[in-house]
Length: 524
Image (cartoon, rainbow, N blue to C red; front, side, top):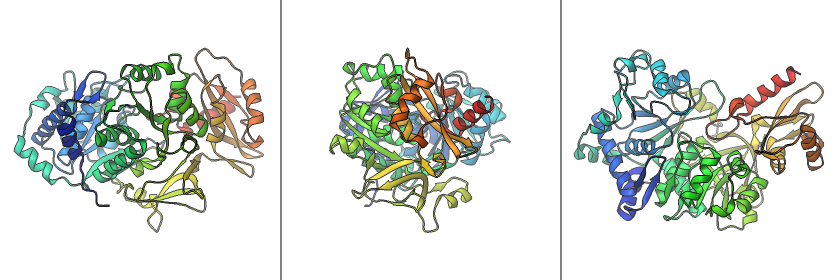
């Protein structure tokens, strides 16, 4: 299929067809499609006046808010490329991303949660205090702060918005943008010392959003609660752009917290939401959870069968779809269809989207080809080459299988597989069972070294508020439900996974969890 649509095409179409309907609801703003388009065009003209041009990269260091959305859309409108920065990063990580992507501008909130972005940017590039560009980040020509008094070398929000290159300049810049232009540099949220910048196009992301929206059955009148950070493709493609390609309303808190999410689901009468197993388990375990107050119909989940069933039955998401993807694939590879029987959708498998080819390598790795696959990693030819097989297939690092029905099923991460003696086990096999215990809010399993078996599983459990259980009780309850080699040798309780290692996209970092487990064992 020939794909020619750009992000601004959808923005224009929504404003024309549904101008008075709500497009975006954030903590501080409610914007109709017409108002959103007007703000995007204003910021696009300001970007042009600031000297930002097609193909140049601009970074966003912001919570999920109306400024993030409008700046992303504005950059896309003139052919500039957005580089979302993880709001949990420290100065060295921010500096690395800005340098690797050669960003010419950064747009930042002064602070968010416990992070002082102003101080972090000054540490990354001291010239923000005096005048850009500086020696640390020579490509960075401008820093714009969305609130507060900016440092002397930066620009305030209203001063930036007052810049105006004019409608003619905007129309000329917009006309030059193509569907194959770069749209986003998505830095991976892995545990490596230096994250890799995945380069995605308008075609990659918008076609992915459209394909997912069709399988989810998204309608223009839907209201979609976003639980993922916009700096992750699960937030940008599968929440924000899914709403853009359908005209649906996106409702987003600044960051995910289960209680706040439940309040928004009720108050905004949201019909769709999405997330991974951890997000849904935290929603279901929260004391404020009450199905009678919710209006959910569907959405997607990257979760195992037991959690999928709970999502459908307890949250009322009877049209929920199972999803699998990764940043390097824009991100969705396979998603079940809301029109399929519920049992098929919650069983943990789905057909890949048309035009995306999937194969399983001899070691069980899922490998991909097709229109959703990234162009490569920014500024890292070696990593790009290593990401592909000699015959051009993307290595996902995930284990899976394809059944006789053509459905792709995920078994886990290659690097997370625990090899117990001669047996291989995926942590999710045990996490799924543990999560069904009435006292358990969230469970995680990792492998630790063992002198006899090479590796054995251990578990970490976060209990529901007010629940009580001992490690011995949980392990005794689990024992008849899993094979002996899968039974955790140790189980520890944690108040939450934030302090040990959880990405802002809601994924527990297994590598840090393994380190924590080894330290606990080493300490007796």
